[in-house]
Length: 379
Image (cartoon, rainbow, N blue to C red):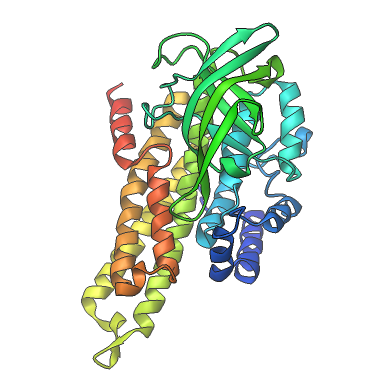
């Protein structure tokens, strides 16, 4: 099988690389992370102009009909540039969820708006007591006439401060940890009864905790079938994890480039430290780890749209577990080889390492997914 990018994908990669180097350098990113919004509206509009926001959606909804490998191209560059815009939350995670399972009227209403850059989304699917378990849902949705009333709390909702709508998982039947009885609702960010406690994440992005107190939505807000939301959610999360794996590829590539450059220029005893054999061995180990990370990310990308649920999930959790461990190794080596410069706020390496750590913790860390992979083998 040929795993090389197509000419169109390489052209997209080149376009993004040139834009990042010209308009989104490290200092620009630092200023954005300290701004009120935490991202650049101009960059978001540029994404829409380039077609990035429309990439994974069908043409009938204003999309380009891209596949997970096309998204891998974009997410690699998101990682290399450490972009702060809510692309992953809006386009990959929530956009993918609505694309794959939303009723047709909801798709017609939401997907063209995302593609045009006029709507941003966030997913509220995790609760404090459930940690990484998507099926742990205590937030409730109660039938009220022609609509629903939502009550409960959600935690660590990424990019919710910039979102126009939030996809909320709520229980319409069953116990707190049952996979059946979970439903998904599209809720306006400023809906009466919805309170968001916002905060900045470690790598400079934004997140928040949600409190829903008798939030009223109508039947048109239901995403998919009532009570059948877990499978929908799991598929969307699998695709989003594949995108995070691709982002990790971009970050470890950038870390290796930065570390190699530093070893060639930093001198000790009158010679570049890159001439020391021990450091050369460590650099070689970093490059080997990066190639293994890329290979696992490709496995995740080509499996992300598989209709075989067990096969898809096994490939995704295996990639997340392996990349979490290998990326941590690359990040630690990069910090150590840079010495004190590797941990200062003014150097990009520390920000890359923070982002790798957050990626590992997002939607399940390496230990969690290693256990899940073991379960798939036993099954």
